[in-house]
Image (cartoon, rainbow over all chains, first blue to last red; front, side, top):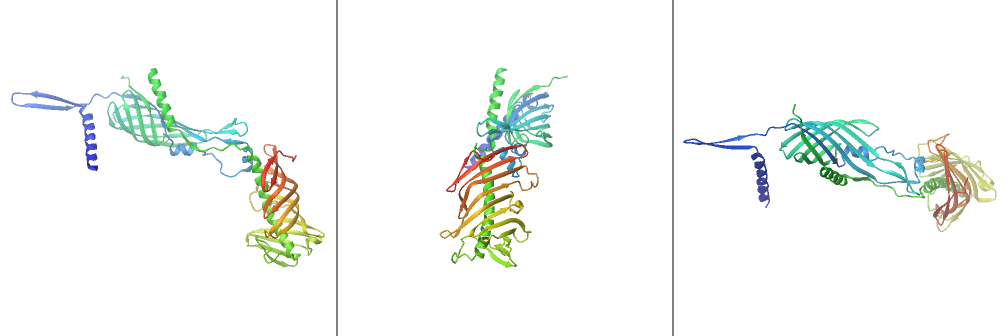
Length: 220
Length: 249
């Protein structure tokens, strides 16, 4: 049973690859008096440089966990501080996502470069125990700006698979640090208007997804 | 265009729901939290001083040769040695008291000076003085004013009048404190504390078997940084505690 499954998967993979490869084949047949010459010419459509803008959301990642989850807490007991806060209570600390805006320019099939901005946030408030009114907002924010390079290792007009790496700065509006991001595996579906899903590490989160728009660069 | 905006909004909303999560839980509203914080501090102070009171009572009973049977105390019994009127009480090397009785018993109106040492390597701290009442073998008053003789993060000073009885069935001392008052500060505050907790017991505090059984304590908390204060009156009955608006000014 296991062997049958393996064979079926290999067959499906071959069909997909064959189908993808077949898009770029042209076949011409020339008949002469005594021979028939079949010429198969493999061609690629001419590549047009493109601009690409993406908007995405990511899950929590290690750097955002460190920056957004009570990283500023003072763990030493302080009776005076406890008394000052005794008439209040805390709401749960909620992570509301990593939001990214990415722009890249693609002048080759396999290479895109540009930059991304990622914003992450967690929210919490302190409320009065008697009146339930908010007495303080304890929200944390983190913002990163990073140049990005993306490598497409499978390129078709409608489907692309890629990896990327980014390195830049991140701030929690208190300190500035150098940090990075990497997409280990990403996949986009669509031509001009597309969706994407990625697995990565760094500021963007472990899992990311979103939508984007591509448009041709204006020829000079 | 409107279609694309709608798709964008729905997609991002779905992703937002999928990626949001709770980092840490919150706390529940507790309108008695401040009262409990203050009472816990005062209880801690009373509990720590209780050991000193028991030590004085045990030495007093030894000197007056009180008869309590073969095993007078269920709890710790110190090893007592004497040299030139100075008695040393050792509680399994955790606490050692050095009591200078000046040759007088408490029921003779004696005034004792007490030092306490914790562990085996620390220097002794001067705890304070104990004064007996003439003709009253189980009554005395104490003034343990040296806050830094308290072993713990929150030093406290306490003075009170004591009457104790030996509880035969429990094999322990039942202790009643009268006219108790004290105060407590942060350990490292020294001369200018950020806050001070003052307390007074307008009614006797009764301890059975080492536990506070009944009494009333008025507590006043003064925050010297924010220049605010708050108070609470704690009523203890059958070991249960209730909080009432403060009477202490």
